[in-house]
Length: 349
Image (cartoon, rainbow, N blue to C red; front, side, top):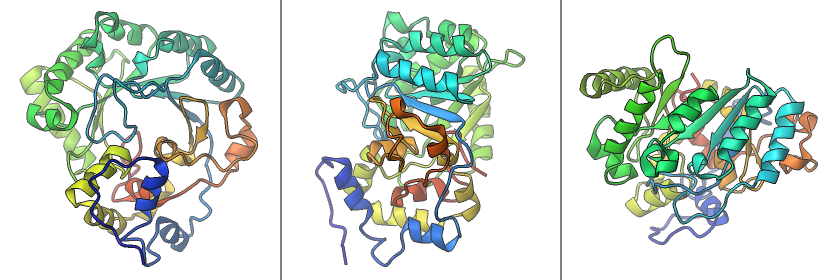
């Protein structure tokens, strides 16, 4: 029987993270795969492939404590233009309805604007999402016109804001982040984002600041709209409540704080078969900065590639194989199936 010992060192590799995820409370056969099997959901198969979530690179102007990408200013991994061209080929030839651009800070990729413009040339109907950390807009004069660029190309902006107070936001994302985030949101509002009848969508993302699951997404959205509107005059469309998955920095935090076992037991006891049926990996393919393919962004960080021998890289895209693949699962997946579920678009129920 494996036991979980206190770990204070930095996890050195995805393989070490996976080894931790096989420890207690999963040493009695209480694994995610066994739960899914009991629910009749093994093998877990896609419903369709309609969302391409593309990691533009791990470079970021922030170093957030909960970041599952382990992104930061010192990261050099970044998608090159040739890989972007291969992504464009896939978008052009297949029925990709949504392109979800993430990072790090996707805008820090020097070819970000070129890539967005090329996607928009393919179709005005494709939904393009940019996962903007807000502070990037103020980080450097070359980013100050991002709201105008987003608007020109009709991007949907999804931005993290841990809370409507400075103390909780800064404790998770760094000193001064809340104030800069508020300024960025006000700029986006000024350009029409989040405002009625503009069609310019601005959504916020809430992640818990500790070892607990998020409260009701509906209740959080109402509270955020009330507080941000009253104090700062900020408007937005929807709030997505996302459960922190035990990957990278958040996994390290759980181990360092001694909360790992309690947190995982909480996720396991909150397993919801209805949420499991709607997990995002069933309609999404995640593309790594180097073009490798994964079932989701979290599997990407654990280097758990898609189970398709003939379609492991964006250059090898085989729509039929990917649509018929078995989704790769591990114990971190409990984060997506707990309670009302969790996905990059908020709760699944």
